[in-house]
Image (cartoon, rainbow, N blue to C red; front, top):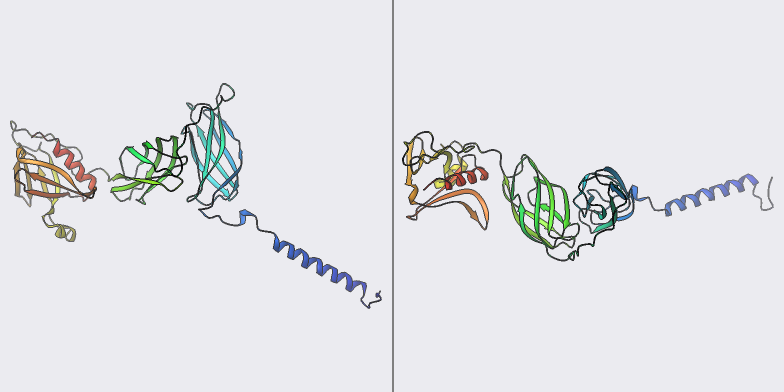
Length: 361
């Protein structure tokens, strides 16, 4: 059948269908893709819309789902109370996280804060409740006055101040001006921060993993507030068990005959540092302390000896406060001898220094 304008009914429906397809295609082009199809910048500030469940009982282990927006790769979940330990966090999508929590049996009941932050973003906060096993959670205690995020943190002590390569250690950092969600980091890439928690503005707890092949020696530990104010303090990565001075032997006193009971340490004499570094086959020397004397031998020949009473100082060598891994022996005459542990490991040099200092003079 034809219309008065000469177009058939079939042609008219074909034109209408084509127009509908074009319109639908244009509409789809105007709809933004869901966030699950795009990635998120680590600088984007996360948003928390819902936490399910938003409470847990003392002693429980529970998986919490956090829904919201702007969760980037490397997103970090933490709590204001160290009694709530984050076991693991899985980023399902930029809009959803799954976090496994373990609540300490000694955790006090009440309200705490849940924090979500991207690697380089401000922190997002949501309420969370710890319920006591006996009944409803008590009213939240008066919150501690937190320092401003723009305040500069200060560190008084780090316990322990050193740890061995290949170990996992919990650090206690005390000081002041630690803001909510303050972070801990290291300049040594072999140290990974597994978890950080803050009970109050004067104390941080950080659990770290040190790689077995991490560089040894002094590195920098940073405490960073969300406002990018930070403080830097030294932290030492020690090597494995020392090769020579694993267990210092008994020191021979002046009243005893010299024997194999004297302390003996394998070292290099730093009289020619370039030769040591370029020639790994250079013979090692031996520092020993028999019968009230400090003796250095190399190749079976005694090259240096001094009575312990003539030793003024034994200490590690530092440059601008950084341990070089070497040590010196300074005599009352002003003569100085420099050495390094034969393993070339700073931690072994420190062990030798500590052992020699304990030798009775």
